[in-house]
Picture: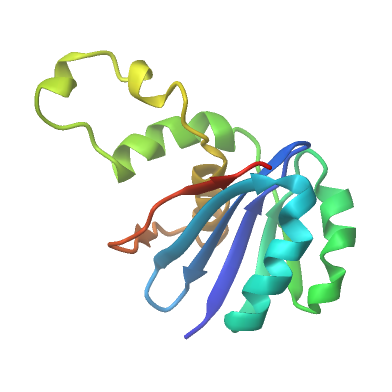
Length: 145
């Protein structure tokens, strides 16, 4: 079982997914305050056998890479252009609108969603040129404080 982490770095918040490469499945998805990223990864690394970390090359990526060297894991920096824009479309693929809600404009369902975890998923999918599924019990968690 090969576990990977993909990160969409940001100035204030980061999206992160923990995925199983063999199963092509996302097991965890979070949006967290950028300041919490090293601590969260240290904790996650203590319970999961993470083989590599994929991080987007956007906002604050170089600062985050420096902070994550303590992991002693392979850090791969990849292009992340337009991932936030593409995350809106991918969000509805992952969480389709059903029933009468289909008659309403999609935008109203996404206004307050943090798409950073979905952006991290897109970074992972772009790197492996393959789609990943979500674990059945997955819930995108947000920790900004």
